[in-house]
Length: 211
Image (cartoon, rainbow, N blue to C red):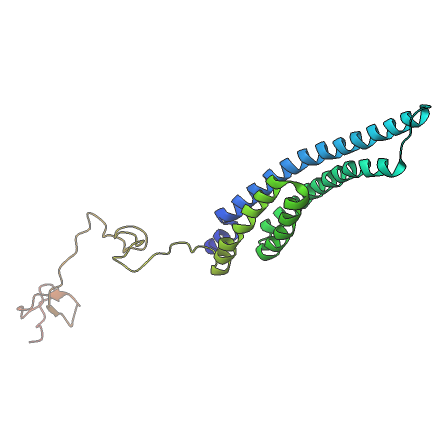
């Protein structure tokens, strides 16, 4: 039971490090996502107001195609913000996979979001996910090797064996109890009294003892 509990509760340090990377990515992703999303909305709203103000003016000539081209960067900023928000929620799923010890699936999905992090989520998110991805190799190797074994009691004289006089050792003799020496003698056939080996007659009843 002790080995089973130790193997179940044990979490490799690589798994803890990967989850720390996920938590940092989550914090940065929610910050970047909100800033980019709000910045994109402000950019698009500003261009829309400027376009309507220009149309209201009598001497303003605006090319609709040019306005659409100017709005495109704002739309990309919005898309980047949405991707960062998606990365934020996805990190919770990846952390749950690590907690469930589904390391290979978590590694595969980390690779996907690492690429998206480099391209759409920002360089910092991609670098952090790259570090988490690299840490999966020793984690998967240690998981295949199994959890560390708990030390067992070894044979006498080896490490882990309790010293004599402790657990499992024979109980010591009780102090104060004298042990009578065993003496070979003759037992009287009449009364059953033990006698010395050289006696010819019973010391109790006087009957003759066998030779």
